[in-house]
Image 1 (spheres, rainbow, N blue to C red):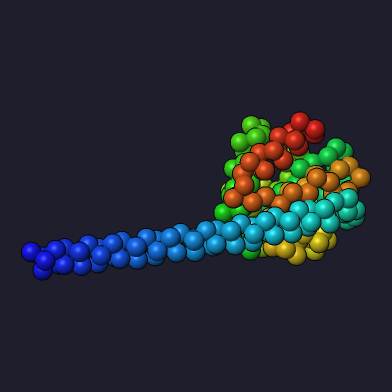
Image 2: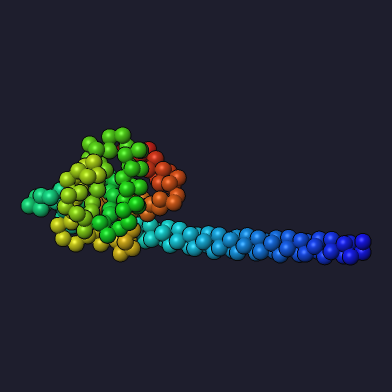
Length: 197
């Protein structure tokens, strides 16, 4: 009987040890996951701060002469700033930027501005994009730079962005959208719509 009792105690201790070891590794994995989430959160926070700083650095920049052409018609040269009589919302992007980000902005614009396709105060300006997309892929013709760009520091970041170009050719309300935070995009577009449209 003592022998069986010893086996039962030994097996019980072995099971308890296995349970403790299993709980230790589960807790360790949970702790490592928590550390990873905190690290990712810190990285996202840093990126948001940089993006915010970039937006501020591009605020109130005088955009002098920017020549563009509509769709595929490079023979039609338009001075963007001289043709503005009231503020316009410009979406600046490139074919080299993330497609998901571009589609996110286009879909958000369509959602917030029911007249998106015909609204002449919503302007899409692109570079390095497939010519097939220039006529109406995004629901309206795209403007392409005849040469150069807006000369905004943000253009070096390779991120699509939005801004208001006022009738004096000054950039205002610069915003870098992030598909991870669609609520910020909604707030931005609602603010633009209420203030300018």
